[in-house]
Length: 35
Image (cartoon, rainbow, N blue to C red; front, side, top):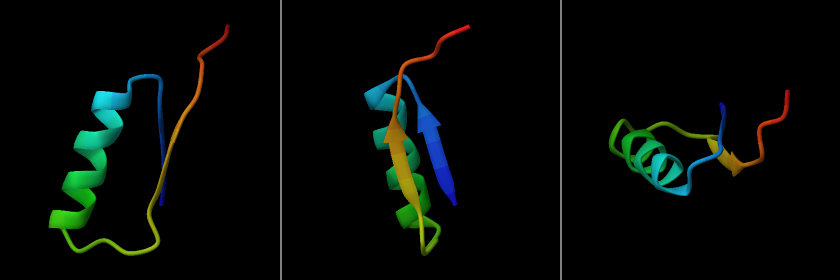
């Protein structure tokens, strides 16, 4: 699973949720949004 967000706090929440769920092979990345 790959998670991408522009907000570091949201990525921290996603990491914690993935760990609590026992999810494996999870990567989170912060990037800028452009349109």
